[in-house]
Amino acid sequence: MSGFRGTTMVSWFVLAIGFGVYLLCGSAELQRFEHPTKSDGSLSFLVIGDWGRRGGFNQSEVAFQMGRIGEKLDIDFVVSTGDNFYDKGLTSEHDTAFEESFTKIYTAKSLQKQWYSVLGNHDYRGNAVAQLSPLLRKIDSRWLCLRSFIVNAELAEIFFVDTTPFVKTYFTNPDGQNYDWRGISSRKRYITNILKDVEMALSESTAKWKIVVGHHAIRSVGHHGDTKELVDLLLPVLKANDVDFYMNGHDHCLEHISDTESPMQFLTSGAGSKAWRGDTKEMNKESLKFFYDGQGFMSVKLSQTEADVAFYDVYGRVLHKLNSSKQLLLHQSI
Ligand SMILES: [Zn+2]
Image (cartoon, rainbow, N blue to C red; front, side, top):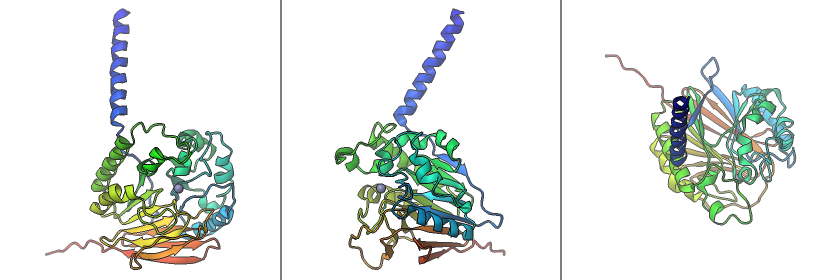
């Protein structure tokens, strides 16, 4: 018996050391989810951000139009760029805001698909861990929110990045806000690991389209503007790995900005409810393709050779479109 107990103790000791090493490194490969394309090989989805206000500030009107456009495009899933629940995320897995701001708002048939969500800074002001809980998926099976993860949809790979911990001022000068930093014992180590994981996953990706989603903008002329930490740390990784689109929320607007040195496009969809902030920052006119201060959302349609992105207002009217083309690889025969 004592031998058995001894072996068990050794096993527990080894497990404890292993877990300690895991906590210290804090790094594991990013969790991956497979999402099949349509039978014709295409893929379409909607992108919405900064939305959960129990239907207020036109959230319900935007949701209605998302349902209509979602039906038209036969969408495969929805992407949420964060700030999912205002003003301070969820209080727990049992917070009624989850159903009042999500389940009972996005009721259209076409929106009964998987939702892939990241956390925004407002989500971190509540119980951030609650939004990651599998319990929420029991209340509404569409919900999937994680910190950083990958959706592999065959012709496109979408890399979701937890951008809130990148922003240093939330740690050093939180302006009276309490952030839920559980699971992030060291900011520096946390973001170093994300960058390493994203860089590795991007470099190994063979997808036709590489899309990165975060809450904070890399480039924006909206109220918050560029996020310096992302410009310094994340942008070089995206450029080095031929990312096609960076999609974000945070600024409550719709916008399209082109990178000056690469084919990458910056797309903001953070207009799911409260908007009309009324202030903008300077940017050279060549980069800024489109900016709209009001409510709305974005759609993305992908095929092997074409990407079609459209922005819609609260009435479902198309405000701006962009198209990117890729050459099919031709095999030469001698
Ligand atoms: Zn935000």
